[in-house]
Image (tube, rainbow, N blue to C red; front, side, top):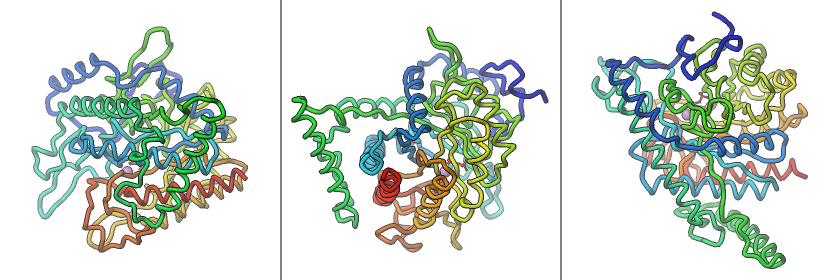
Amino acid sequence: MTSASAAAWSPGSWRGFPAAQQVEYADAGVLAHTLDDIAQLPPLVTSWEVEALRGELARAARGEAFLLQGGDCAESFDDCSSGPIAAKLKILLQMSLVLVHGARKPVIRVGRIAGQYAKPRSADVETRGDVTLPAYRGDLINRDGFTAAERAPDPSLMLRAYERAGLTLNFIRALVDGGFADLHHPEQWDMSFAKDSPHAAQYERIVESIRDALDFVGAITGTHSELLRRVDIYTSHEALALPYEQAQTRQVPRRAGYYNLSTHFPWIGMRTAQLGGAHVEFHRGLVNPIGIKVGPAMTREWLTGLLDALDPDHTPGRITLIARMGAAHVTAKLPAMIDAARATGRTVLWVCDPMHGNGETLANGVKTRRFDNIVSELEQSFAVHAAHGSHLGGVHIELTGENVTECIGGARGLTEADLERAYKSRVDPRLNYEQALEIAMRIARHLREVAR
Ligand code: PEP
Ligand code: CO
């Protein structure tokens, strides 16, 4: 195969490369028609928002801002309704406030939201009893019911996913424009159902002290402080289903290059980061900032090859490396990755995903993660970066704004027995509202120490 970077790129050039994690659609005609539809429809995000985010990520890479990226492992079509969306926005805003307070820096808020509908799977099939069917790959690809009809890839789901992403984004933009993030609206900043949380008092103090600071600035300058009335929320998802991503990739007036306007911030997952593979080929031609998951199997040569293919011009803010090593491996594996990236001469943004290396399956088959392992990977990551003259510039977390019971531990001490109470995720277990806020406080404490 010719080297990816040497050949001409087009939105469809990935089709000449081996593509992992893709599906076959039974009816090529329906597929082509659906993709044409999606390509005609307006973009979900705009190029100037994408440019703004890349600028902010460049600041984070230089240590001048901190990235909070979070949301569901997989969004589901059923959850595209006001309650879950508002709850997710609320927890992201609340976490970001806690992080601003700890870091004394701007926090860039990016949701795994408005398009996180396709999932890579370790196994292509799922067996129950004596029935084996294709694996569920996210609502954009197939349905999670266990029948052959539901598991068959259905092109119309791509259109449904595009529409639901649009509806989600519309609601988020309306909430934010309407003052959802205004610190003077206490109902948005209350700890909702978790008022009796062990962390409520600390959280209230943080909100109060920021409110005071804003009022103080307002009094001095004689203006009602707009500082936290309007915030930016960006979207991200794993750009996995390449036909869908290609359909939203286009040129825009008065700018060079191609933008994937299905999201501000696509990332390449661990299972699709092969050098010479279709996902790397597709992403290399996009102008968007790009995330790359870095797992324990990543080598120096592989990482260097990815950086050279995806960021030949050393563009500030272009590359975010999302390390997901696991608490047991991060201290051993991360240093070589930090060195390898630095040796290329690039200033990349390093982020810790403390979720995906810490999954475990209980004896009863339930997938969970332990809060302590999540915290441990975060703490080790801060320490490794500090010891290697680098800095951790962000976190990537699977969470929900709801009161689910999917991860074990946290201040309320959720146990294995609690998991069955409110386990909703169809894929990976997420931190619930209270656990997510607790993680933000732990991270804020570290950022405070680094800032001293
Ligand atoms: C994910 O972020 O949901 C995911 C599948 O991650 P990874 O590619 O790191 O396994
Ligand atoms: Co996940």
